[in-house]
Image (cartoon, rainbow, N blue to C red; front, top):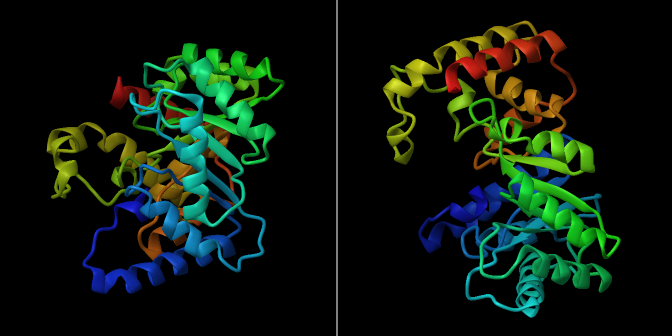
Length: 291
């Protein structure tokens, strides 16, 4: 998403493209090969930037993008047309995972899953996913695809130590039962779980309306524990602990990276694992500061 939201004057486009390609290479070098984008991110700009990175890369890369079911998209053919435009921007003949971005009416979930089965059979996508689907909506999508003998591969939802709704709603349990992977977006809560911000250092941009002094004071015990647990694991940072917590929950976190240091920080969440005791402590303090 961050690669689509970068808005700079035209003369800086070359530098933005260079920065993104360097971030991409560092990420690949760290062993990360899953990249998630969407037609909505920057009105296709994110897909275009990712497409530039994919040129001349022979590594085994897994690409996911999303279809937005706008209310004026009323037929199954709209999904195919949007997918073909995404493939053109990405420079690919198929994507590994295609997701319905939101469960927006009036077209039914079943109709969009029928459209997904068509593009699977045509070889345009390898797997079907959804995003922001509730447990009930996930079940509908799963059953609709199952009639075509196609599994529902994933559900991408907001999930972090500061947003445990997927657990409390029963979605995590349902997805484990149905073998659906949860992809966790906003895993660092727009940087709040990196430890950079405190009650004395509040974000100065659009985030300040939510992550204000009162809120940051409330979650200080969680931020302190992220530091404490990180120090016990070879001085891992709060961000790496927060991402590893999601990995231990069997979710796939997808943190964004607009800067090289962020890409390196994200990669540091791999190759080690929190203990069961660490996870229980984080669960407990998370519940205390969020409920």
